[in-house]
Amino acid sequence: MPFRTVLMRCLLAATLCLAGAAGASEPRPAADLDFASLPLQQAIKLVHGNGRRRLALFSDPDCRYCQRLERDTLSRLDDVTIYVFLFPLDQHDDAARKARLIWCAPDRAGAWDRWMRDGQLPQAGVCLPPLAANRKLGEALGVRATPTLVLPQGQLLPGAVDLATLEHRLRDGP
Image (tube, rainbow, N blue to C red; front, side, top):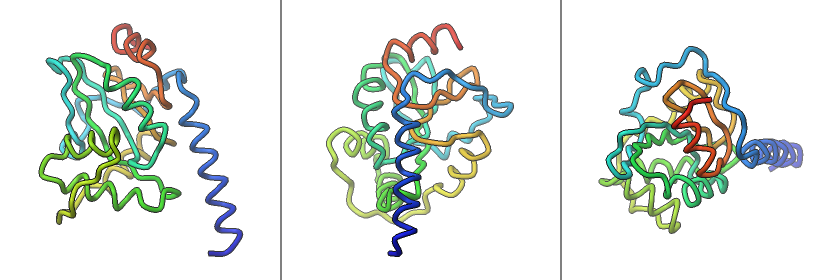
């Protein structure tokens, strides 16, 4: 691979990692986003507790900040349904393959949890995952990095936010 290509990938990865590390960023409105209009059939559905609260997440299987958000925040969130839109970033060479394996697993939610928490990928499955559609959706909404949460009020919340911040945003809005 040419040096210039390697350099550009490193710079892009560093930029997106810094965005992911930003943590408790202020939410920003997505372009006229109505949460109910999200194509939830393109997402993995995770239900914690009774699932009465909702949020969406754009996440990359190889993003360490996404893994931190899952481990430190989302796994401790009660009574929420999380819709995970697989959003593999170009600088993570193996992320698209992993996203396909997870999407094509018989139990997508279980496959996602096992990968993000334990590093265990499912066996190969054959299907057509909505990765290109998720990419277009994320770009249309202004998703610039992973992880990015979509709050029920229509705001985007980028970064690996802590539990208290997310609870506040879910309860009180921006």
